[in-house]
Image 1 (cartoon, helix red, strand yellow):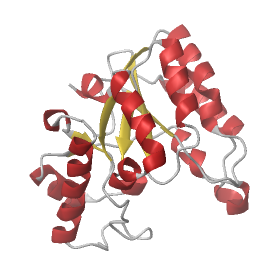
Image 2 (cartoon, rainbow, N blue to C red):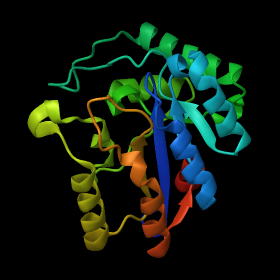
Image 3 (cartoon, rainbow, N blue to C red):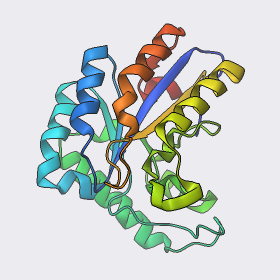
Image 4 (cartoon, rainbow, N blue to C red):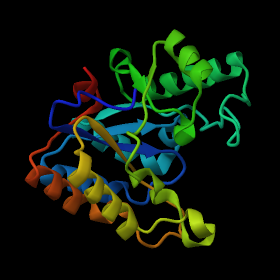
Length: 224
């Protein structure tokens, strides 16, 4: 699932976390300042990292929605051919169950864990079915916008997208097509080689979306 109701002027701000989290305090402060509930998808490794645990506690205390992003952030299929699996079903399911256990251990209620974002936002039809059998619906950011490219850095060459380029794409797409039902993904932590962090612009993104009449909701509300 990559989009909510296209007839409703709603969007969800989605944040993933694995081994990097230097922007989380800023993200949480921005959401609180703007009275917005975010949707956080966290790996088991993130949840087990001692330095990240205060962030998880704040997410819960601030009323944000939390779910899974795999346990070890495994790559499930080949970058060149999505259908070429790199994991077997047993190991994939074990990874998901370990992530669910870590989430419950952090205080997330099991009945809230109905959606997850696959690691690397990468999946195929088989892994979607495998996750469904565990009780997890696979979701991803909505195609067309490039906010998820905020992990790139200049040394990547042509793959790098600056925050200016990402935001230009976002607002030009919105002006042409609208963002009704969109899941807008931003990474809470990125490589040190990226200096222009997209999360520095979160206040402006929220302000512009509100000004354009969008209601910012969490993923369960967007997809219900």
